[in-house]
Image (cartoon, rainbow, N blue to C red; front, side, top):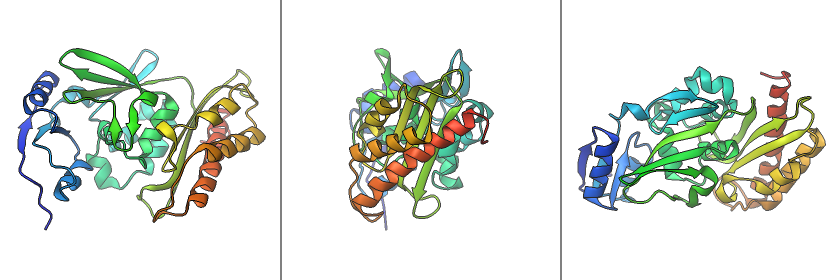
Length: 292
């Protein structure tokens, strides 16, 4: 029987209240919203927090809205809500692509966007998608708010820059382009990816040349979930099949997958390159109105 260790439970009434509770219980306290990762870890005694601070009642963190030229996503927005959002589908199809492939409806109905990012699982889909989008994460503490570029948010497997006493409250994404896509290979539906890649492209007026590009990778040991060397190769170049294949080759060369139950290292490296090329191809086709 899987039984968690004893812990205190507190339900926060506001962000300030949540921060006060985190300060009261100290660095071993944990925030819970969806609990899709934390609760199984507690049952296996892989995590033994002294207290859980429940933030499910903080409705101000459950909104999706457009604020100027940015999309604002509250930290406790559920995966299913992100998937169903018309504004996300219109402006950021990469998130819709990724959410369609995350777990199953039960997990998507409970799991939260902020929880997924803070878990920092090296195989997490949204981390790669938001890294490609160059999202900014808003972290709040008793001392105020600070903005963290997502490419500086992850410090290692299951580790982020969020300190004890801090709370991720919002994800902000610049709305720059419709040219984005996410591609994934998994062993079975809803599984963690063997490899996955996301691409975000800003093209010139004629949609023939790459002005700016973001490429995210997951499950293949890419530092910060980013294929930075492939981005450098593609930036300023023609948006062509030849360049996309080259970007995929560079991404595969610079990632660092490991052999495990999902496949050998060389297979994952091959997949990384193929999926980067596919994501770039699909994003460009969408931008040109050649594919939905």
